[in-house]
Image (cartoon, rainbow, N blue to C red; front, side):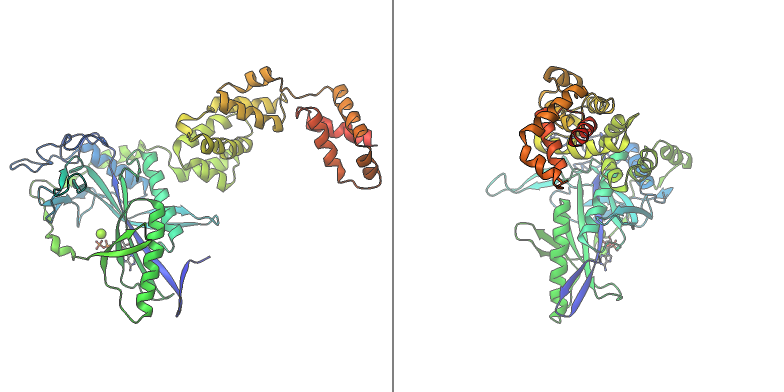
Length: 483
Ligand code: ADP
Ligand code: MG
């Protein structure tokens, strides 16, 4: 089960730690009142503070602080009632102040953990080292003019949470599971939308390799990977590169690299500056951030039920297997949908329909739970028609397809198309007699001992009845007539 990279000198273990930048859901920036909406025209959401005009002073946004605390609580992490903002100094064209306000030695959130679920059904706790608040930078646009670069400061000053993991991850699969779980938790909390395409969640991937049982070796950091798939690919590519370096008698140097997804390789960007190059010092414009314990406790009480708790409850309350429960709680909207369908009905059957037929319909129609072609109430209605014997399970599949196509409810479709299950034993007996008469050769084989043919007769009778026969009664009638 252990993931390794095979080299000429044997197996190498891969060690991974992730630094995730998650954009805080908030109407305004971390230290200014400018708006944060995605996709606004360039430089329309920039205050004097964001543009670093002289004399402008940052004012902390209380909601961003609350969001960071909620996220920390959702990661079972220690909340530091006193934290501090520092200036991280560097020059970049899209950083007008010449420094980023970040939290260096005293982050708002300390150690926590995230439980990940793996494909083989096992779980593993991954340590979270810290979460701190910081500002995002602006964006340089190099493709708008042949000789000039443009700067868009809309993103400058937007609140980010940097969430740093311990080097506890050991495979691309674990890294992918970690990112998915972190994203799910933040979506439940409403603290980050986790949209990697829009850049509201980005990952820096730290990778090293070692022989089993050894101390950690030097790591490289692959910067700003913007999809989970690319994170997983980048880990594999980078680990293979490092194994080759070590086995060639070389040394892996600590550096920052980029993942080239078109070529499937990482390449060097810059050697890693030491932290002291940033000349961190406490921002003199900001007091230490001191939180009221009662306020933190109140935020804790107002958190929604989180995915792990919900999954445990689904297993307990609805008797679902771990796999089903895990799939259903991955998005809160899916979990809510499921609960509406399952309430007062066969909960396992409801799970099968949501995970199987409904998800398949999403794939076909390109829709999702938010604009589902079949509402939770309508799917529940379909299950009710099966439960009270109006239709059989086979016909239910057709009714569901018609519901997806037409948007009508199950009862209407059943009535309009005459799909009621036939329980009239006279009609069933007649269909059975007709099938047996039409298949005299098969009947003879059956009587000669080929009992497997029973299933064939069931199929023929159902076909003769356009799928509408009550399966139990069809079986009974066949048994009777076959003697
Ligand atoms: P920095 O502040 O220089 O980025 P950190 O000590 O904060 O360094 O670590 C950054 C990330 O690197 C963390 O996610 C951590 O888990 C990871 N990391 C540390 N050592 C290793 C290693 N040997 N191999 C892989 N990842 C590592
Ligand atoms: Mg770092």
